[in-house]
Image (cartoon, rainbow, N blue to C red; front, side, top):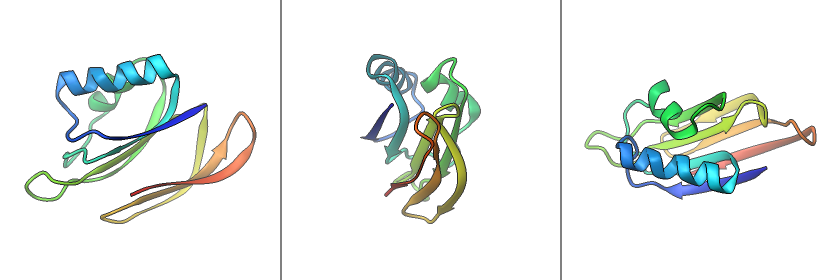
Length: 110
């Protein structure tokens, strides 16, 4: 299992989505945090274009008016089982179980 965090500086264009998908595929990423997504609302299509055929979940902090900011935490469902989460305008905290080791952990993205 690998975790990546990336200041994406805007997600949603087909070229950025391909870059994320390439990173996930080449590096075997299971959990990814994206900072500065610059998105008000991430859609299922946006997530699927990044992950391909994986069954994934995600949490999001919407970008501010004008497009700055935004956070996305996304993971493969078979790898991380979300138990609870907390979100503010500047961070995401996700608590759950890493399935392979049955390890309970908290992942924070800010």
